Image (cartoon, rainbow, N blue to C red; front, side, top):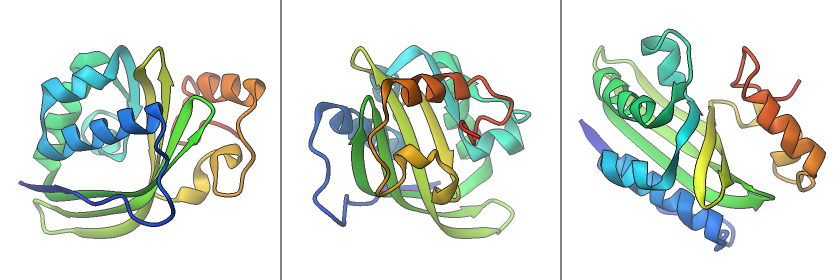
Length: 171
């Protein structure tokens, strides 16, 4: 399966510690390096990705074993998967990545679409992540031009991870 990691393009990228951690996550994912991926995510990570809808009964990927399963599921579903995070922006203890996904499934279906990812970092590790096929569906406080997440909004984001439709953490 072909996998690449696009360069961080666009406006001046965020150079903070949390953005650096997320860059390491993308590099590990591009290389399909499970150990490097697990080095940057917390043992209790929760990741909500579109692959879960198809291959994980719609459930999020939980914990280190869940992230290993995510890598296996991505391999099973996609012949080619290019994740291109073009801009990273830190908002409180979250990192928002805006970019594109280009993919070709084993059945021949092709995809080239804008995407956004939101990652929460606590104690130096990524504890939560969500992929958005439509960047406008992520929480307003994290969208371009949105204000920084307040502590109330950040706690709503954490609570949103427990909602049934975790791809849309805030109403």
